[in-house]
Image (cartoon, rainbow, N blue to C red):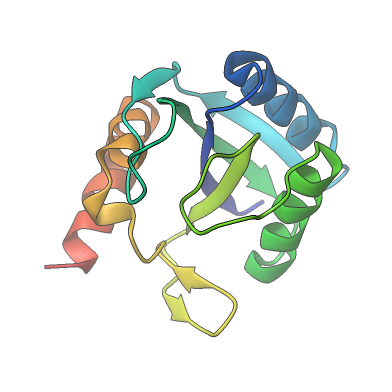
Length: 144
């Protein structure tokens, strides 16, 4: 099965519990298996900084889904957990971003791989380095 790497974050409600619930829901999906997950780190908000700190983590998954279908599965989990998108980079109950899918490179209106901003976000790279340093290095190499 193809490998993919996700970045998860939350900063309202009970972020640690929401991250754990998102991991549980990902692993319960019939076409996704969580292989490993990073520890949770606390980070300052990025982009829109006048909000609570975030809890962030990374997950390595195996999936039978194509990248766009995996993106939709992640968005479905976010929605089912109660995420409502009010503002770009605003507070969130849960955020699940597809960071990398194998070593695929794509740029469409719906999905860019590797993730368009991963290379400049320590809250993505730090947990990713913990579980997949080679993937973090590959992402950085794509943006140089």
